[in-house]
Amino acid sequence: MRASLPYARAGQVVGLLGGSFDPAHSGHVDLTRAALRRFGLDRVWWLVSPGNPLKVDGPAPLATRMERACAIMQHPRVEITDIEARIGTRYTARTLARLQALYPGVRFVWLMGADNLAQFHRWGDWEDIMQRVPVGVIARPGDRISARMSRTARIYRAQQLPGRDSALLGRADPPAWCFINMPMNDVSSTQMRADGAWQR
Ligand SMILES: Nc1ncnc2c1ncn2[C@@H]1O[C@H](COP(=O)(O)OP(=O)(O)OP(=O)(O)O)[C@@H](O)[C@H]1O
Ligand SMILES: O=C(O)c1ccc[n+]([C@@H]2O[C@H](COP(=O)([O-])O)[C@@H](O)[C@H]2O)c1
Image (cartoon, rainbow, N blue to C red; front, side, top):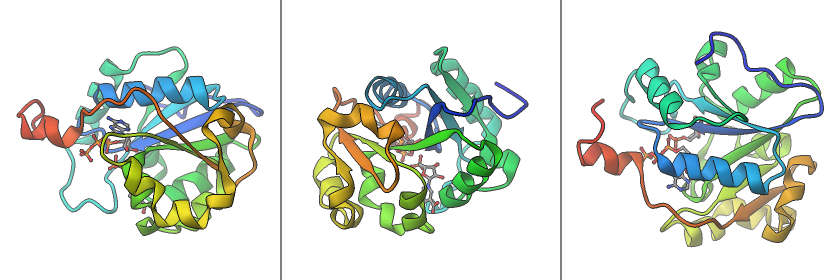
């Protein structure tokens, strides 16, 4: 876990996986490894959120979620960060604006599971997000159809890269997005909390 901002140099492509990580699990790890392989990324940063603006229940303390995330995701090209708490944002559009100002010349790609694409049009300034960065979407059990039928997918149909061209996403100019399939992992934090595997 780092006390400073993560490092990236101009020209690199950094995938950002924002999440509640309450708790982090193998689905996040699989998504991250697939994103590194498929989207032409140099690095991935996990942004452990101070709290999802759309979720009513507060998550477990940030330090507890960070500790678990660091324990489960160990990879030389992946950083676990609480950067949103440090810069005082929880809305993705604002996070991206701050990161782009802090890291001129670094290319960022927003990463998310298919469930988040399905409701992406409810996020604050979601069209600004689409204009700022390419978006990589990873299949999730039960959400493939709702994601493909989503308002975002329909509005940005012409800007969708086919899965076979996913390696171009990192260097594509926004708006651009790509949906990839991977061997699906049906683990979820909700289920882990329900099973008593994680206490808030
Ligand atoms: N099993 C999975 N397969 C693909 N993507 C996933 C999977 N689990 C989580 N993600 C994605 O990882 C990001 C962070 O997820 P999050 O921390 O909310 O975990 P979660 O399991 O979805 O939690 P919850 O059940 O509390 O909503 C989101 O974009 C989510 O879509
Ligand atoms: O900006 C928003 O309005 C917004 C609304 C919902 C979710 N997000 C972000 O989406 C990421 C995934 O959230 P979650 O809770 O599904 O893990 C996390 O970084 C949230 O901050 C962002």
